[in-house]
Image (tube, rainbow, N blue to C red; front, side, top):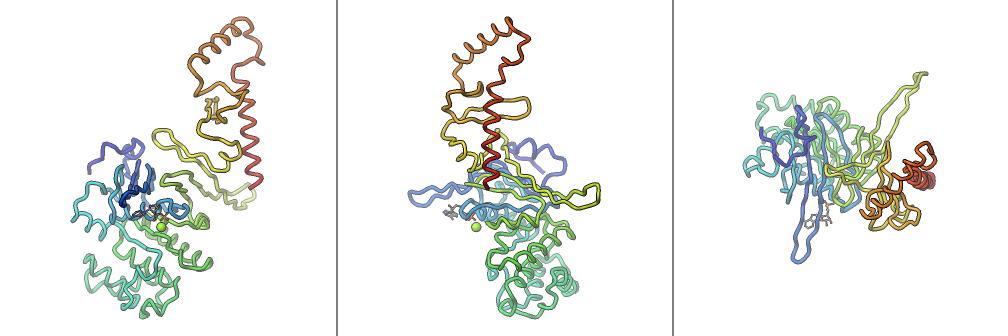
Length: 362
Ligand SMILES: Nc1ncnc2c1ncn2[C@@H]1O[C@H](COP(=O)(O)OP(=O)(O)O)[C@@H](O)[C@H]1O
Ligand SMILES: [Mg+2]
């Protein structure tokens, strides 16, 4: 297995390669005079056996990402590896094999997942027959087992039109995993379902992930998906913006607590996206000042009078000021109140207050 030289160090250095690894992924659509950058340097790593949701507003690039990961579309630039295959360098025939053997899909439109003139059992059996890996005599038993796993055994002899939307999506999941793909990809699998049915379908995907260990990526605009997965990645404008990790902890009385922690995502060249509400609260525009503190990085609006010392100052100012502070250090080394970081700390407190005020307000 070759590793693309452009692969990020964090991706390349893992002995156990993740099942999905995207780095600096770019997809540009050109139509006549217009150019749309659907993916603008997206980074994403999903480890083997993980269940991850990618959420983002309509138009943020979710379907574009899934088309690439499923081998239907080819990115303009960057790295995309799925189940150990390099999606940029694949030949056409390798792509066909990849789609047949390595990945399964569930699409939003229930009609796109199943053939309308076949029953649920025939749809699953057809998927097994096309891949040709399950001997003919074993197909009926495997089909029944898959439909039972998805709790739609009773739909075996029904055609899609005779099933509810939720039942159709469960059968679609059975079809998607029929050939034991390493990765299951779902694009808005609950987009046409009501809330309760959506929750059941997402739980079905979670149990398939848990029981069969198939690496699963669900993309959706519905933030409620995060209640069903341990990790939610938010994309904005074709780039990974934040991640929410959910965990369960038990306190000293044995009570269960569900904890969700939100993180901003730092890409490999150090870029991160500030949440809209932070940008608005501090009226951040165009240029901001950064300062390195012992345990955090401060961000300040660019044009404040009492600004902290940090990234973005002119060299001339900095050398003058550091010369001054050197003088001061020589004169009054014991005067802690004059420590050079103080102004930055005050401004940092203001920024924190503003940030917690937005949190309180939301
Ligand atoms: N085949 C295409 N040709 C031109 N533009 C496209 C094409 N597919 C997607 N786009 C554009 O790329 C952006 C992302 O689209 P998409 O990936 O479908 O977003 P999402 O699934 O998050 O709603 C949108 O601006 C969309 O209009
Ligand atoms: Mg979409």
